[in-house]
Image 1 (tube, rainbow, N blue to C red):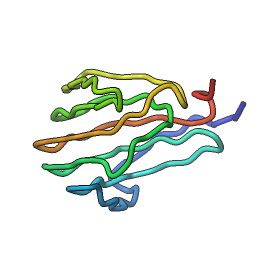
Image 2: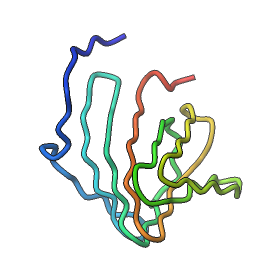
Image 3: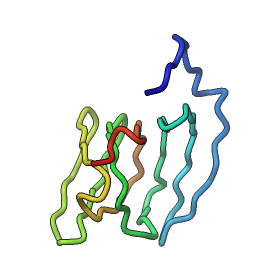
Image 4: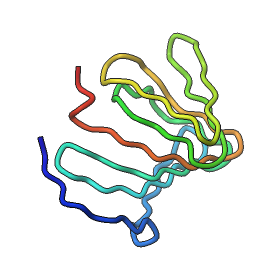
Length: 113
């Protein structure tokens, strides 16, 4: 377990990094606390992830909507106020966003089976 002292996060002061997808771009603002990662992620319009992800996540849709596509063909549309949760190695998934979206994503060691 990790000990994280009380703190507030001013996301406007957290640097954005660009990550190119198969199409479109994801912009990440990332904070790392040992085995815990917290990110605000924005997908541009027309975004398609460039890989199938095996990592576990807690994903909260803050603005817009996106589709979480599973490699088995299932698709789940998440809109503002919706969340999905998955542990590491329990699905192959990728994100698709037609019009752009803003997400809060939390992941880390606590999601390992």
